[in-house]
Image (cartoon, rainbow, N blue to C red; front, side):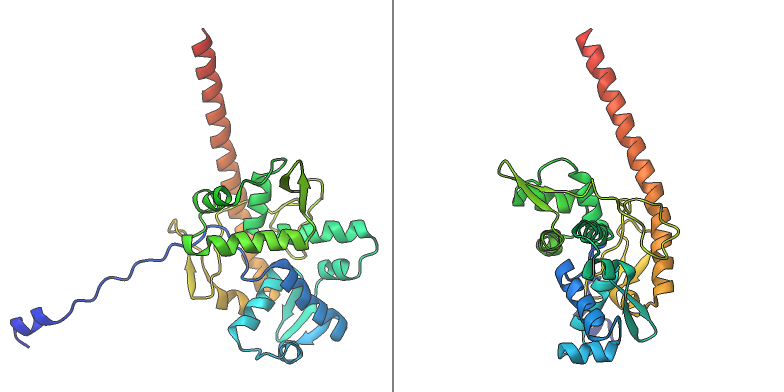
Length: 273
């Protein structure tokens, strides 16, 4: 091929590296996850094969929608997967067959708070009203790193999940996301995550379209297919590792905020003098 022909050939544009959300959130809300757990608990006495559950739902167990729904139920810690069998977790049983209304309320909050993005937002607005929709979407993008094309989805999933879990409360014409009075326990098997709420952290999201890469260039790379295929012991290993990262980042962020507060106080004292 001569030089003139080479020059006429179209050049391939380099592929842009997609920007991913820093905080993980599911593709379906808490209500859908709970419905999946209900099917397993009440139609299978707590255990159903993936294929049987799919047949019950009238879908293919190989379809992406079905896989994402079962994954959401596992992310909310309502279903446990072992080989091809899905079982309801102790957390799910407490929600579906509670001893008291208080237990159900606490366990629904616990399930909600296992989602990193939801946990981070609840922590950020503890004791404060949630901002208006436009401001809230801006915060999702700028503070929590939700990529622009998923902001609406993240907002909808968070509010739908909080509403289903009974965590949204109106007072004085303002909406509050109330979880701080509810003790959140670590899910079964998550021995690497400290007791209490799972701390906010730069966690990866799991969009349906492909692999996920941490925007900061970190070591973690997870795709929806990975998460859906993991057995629960493998799934918990991931959460334990993420828990360690979360603790380090949480401490680092707290140190930065304390330092900034000290600087502002010193500057204020100097101005008064």
